[in-house]
Image 1 (spheres, rainbow, N blue to C red):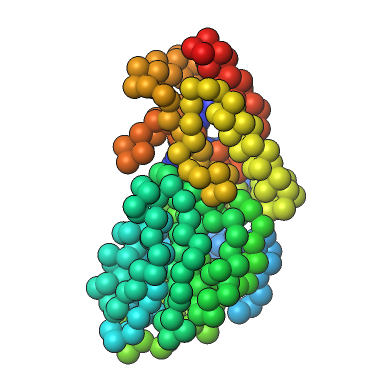
Image 2 (cartoon, rainbow, N blue to C red):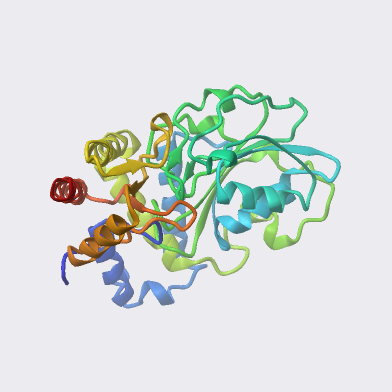
Length: 360
């Protein structure tokens, strides 16, 4: 295989050893003579996979028995509706912070189930910052935030305003889950598509504080009822067996690196190298305000359309994959999730410097 540096926003890079272990398990899962793809989901063999994955999530997040960990179908997009369906009554109100496309999609779905108060938005600046001044009604059922915005390259760093809101806190952490140290106990519900930081596409991780469930009066379809999923151990129907197994391998890898504390330091170093190269280039400019820059998605533009086209052309020649920016922002985006090697970021940073010197 040729060497490529995969900066795709998702599905994204995974640790090399996870690819190797998952590949081996497709042929023979731990000497059983069965592929992980044909392993019965209600067998003790797979139940141990699921249980270990749940326990590792709790260990890495520092959570106790008050939280439950689920592995579900449907992606984070299904959680946009599943959250309000389970938590928000028709005559009740939830508060949302609008920080990008995915937050706005969550707001749209929530309006189908109750009242929604968008208490702050950065839309007027094309979502290039995180709103920090807002008032949350104490009567609201919950406050919903998107912790990292992949398209715009913004991320929550100071959580004190939402911690202090005094109502249940719900977070879409699809693109920065387990990438930095947080007091995860302060979140009442966290959801994350696995395909950026914790596994392969096809499974969504949901962490719920069980005490917030059971208050809505509506009839919830069985497959969308968190309490039913908890009671059935994420096996109401056939779970995404292979995707959950890849999550387990990735969680094991993260623990071996030293957990969230260790990976945060590496993520800070990677982001620091890239932002420094961009800021000092003279021809590139970051799209997000500096205090809200993401450690996961580095978005930037060039000073002209001609330079952007040339930069993308040379990136392709040098095997830097997935660096074209989202159409909403333009320019470029380098996604540097947990599994992105520091060495690849160093090489890309040097490439940016050299390109800028040639064009400057």
